Image (tube, rainbow, N blue to C red; front, side):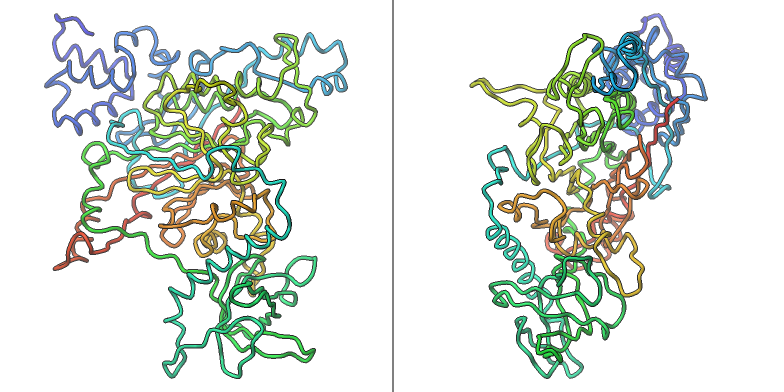
Amino acid sequence: MSSTTESGEQIIERIQILLGEEYDNYKESFEVIHKINPLSNPHKFISHVEKYLGHPISAMNDKLDFGYHKTELNKSSSRSINKKGISGIKGYSPSRKGVSGNSYKFTNIKSFSNIMKDFGNECIESESSSNSKITTFKSNITPIYNEHLLRRKGCLTDKSFTKYYAERIVENSEDSLWLDSDLESYSKEIDRRIQSLIDEIVSNCSDLWIDEQGNKYPIIPIGETRKQAVVTLGAIGCDNEGNLNEQSVILLGTRASSSGNISQLKLETVNGDFALYPGQVVAILGNAEIDEFGQNCILAKEIIGGLPPKPAETSLKELKNIPEFYAGKGEHPVQCMIFSGPFTTDEENLNYDYLNEILNYANIEKPHVLILLGPFIDVRNESVKKGDLFDFGSNTFITFEDLFRRNIYNSIESFARKNEKVKIYIIPSEYDAVHPFPIPQPGLKESFFPNTSNEPLTFCRNIHFLSNPCELYINDIKISITSSDIVTPIINSCITKSGNLPIEVVLSQFLYQRTLFPCFPVQHPINPKLLQKLALSGELPHIIITPYGSSCPFVKSVLGRIFVNPTGNKPFSGVSLYINSPTESQIQQANELCQNSDEQTCKVPLFIQERICADEISFSKN
């Protein structure tokens, strides 16, 4: 604490020198929360700053948070900050002390056989010395969604307001045993999923299928024929082993509604464009006939590609209560950082300096939530493929379990212990070595921290090992997360009438099909017994997070929901997502929609698209 002989002006002047350009951010957050100027109560302002720094402010005279010297912070070239938060971070090159630091002698693990093959025995000594070299990065921030909305670092927000709840699809490895599944059981589970969605489509949409005379179109099973226009429901299939095309499209019936019959689907008469892929559940409006070869066929006029999603809504009363979960009476957003693996600096070695850089960066920002999507030990990495991992620091071979615990988890745990208010969610990948479970996968704790004793294992309470996929609730926002690329399978197998397939159309399929894995045959290792657990049941998520490798990182609004691609084809990048409370203007707009209506029953928009903003965080090697 400061000396009692200092005046208020002297105390504030000293804090300004120590904080540099960050002073304005702390001053603004103090004024919003406490409704007074720092000069009015400088000692309370010191407590406010210390609360978010996590240590006494006197420690900043020599070092400010994990090795960042005050002289470094005051350089205008290192951080560009405005009063509303971070607008850009350029030239960021943190000290390697502290969170990631050099707690472990080895940072660069390589395949021993590769080293011997490429360089020879004489290079082992030089290889050992090269491990001490640390890859450094600089970062840059680029707004990519709702640039005009407020960005405020998590370190300047009171996190005690925010509520979290995570839901795992599977809890343990016993749920993920699948080698005893046969083709018949697989077929039955697929059939059950299709029939479940068909029932929902009929229940919600059949009253809308009206002809010009005002009569409802009859709904018939696949295999029946009628002279009049009818509606038939089933799943899209392909009648050959090649790729789907307009001549090979068939409609697959379920056991319950169509006795497993199939019918050729003719698309020449479809009004407008369409997007079809194998496994997609659809309703077809058209004529069911017998073709010239004596086979059942449907002349399609209109295709309803699944169950249209309902708007994201809540009651007026609940909307008015939402600001209570956001600091500053709703003025401070929740910051959520999302990064997707692999977290190595290249595809050949196992150098995790990039992961350490993420943790160093998060240590400055102190977001409310840090989401890390696997793979963490990527089976596609050249050193992992060899399997003979060698630590040149200790001259010993190591296992994948050792690698994860020492090079990955220990760094995350070190960060977590020093940032107890940051929630860290770790999601596995189908490409994670030593985690061979099919989707839905249990958390990585099952593979790397098996509990073989009667005593329960203890972890940092802010580290959470979630399943893949999983659901996360942050205040009023529901988020579905998967580390699997669920976009590419649809793009690779989808046909359209126009030949054009906007990414928004692809993303909408997860909402229409009520699942993150709508394609069949599946292109991911999925446990057929747990197929129903992959359905997007209940209220649809407001945000869906999935990596898509053929695009730059993006945040897109589709049908009132937000889709986040955290990394894409741009290495060393992630997304910083800000979730804002509804504004007074939005609440007033909702009030006008519910005039003379009960607040508890009147439904109003959640304004998801308007409340979210996002930045791309990109790192580049120095």
